[in-house]
Length: 122
Ligand code: SF4
Image 1 (cartoon, helix red, strand yellow):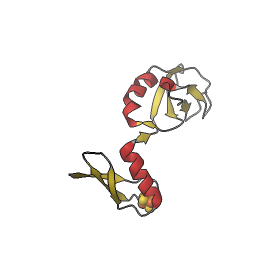
Image 2: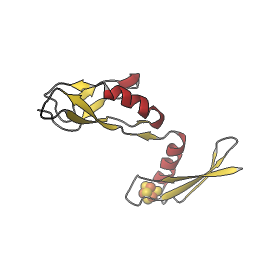
Image 3: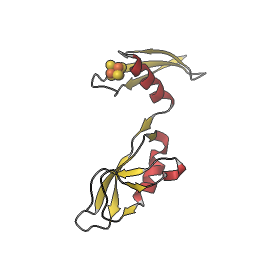
Image 4: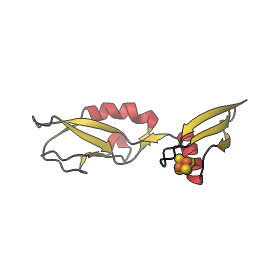
């Protein structure tokens, strides 16, 4: 019996609602509809097979004026790794000065993903 999976494409402001029909036994995607372009089809497939997100957070600093620094990963990470990664990020402590875009933690969890500052810390 096929199941329906709904995905909202975030590739552009149109925000198309896309429905995937998936064979429950084989987990194969049988049909994709609702996308207005090829990009949406690729997005929906990736979202179903391996959803990824850029992780955004804050890390502690040694600054009394700005005790938290906003950061993000430099590439999307698998959603099922986000929670584990948040525990790692929660232990990061940076010393000023930090420049916007500077790597504050390298190769998190050996995944070739870096944490970068999204603000200056002076
Ligand atoms: S399917 Fe195409 S048109 Fe629709 S939101 Fe995605 S990228 Fe935009």
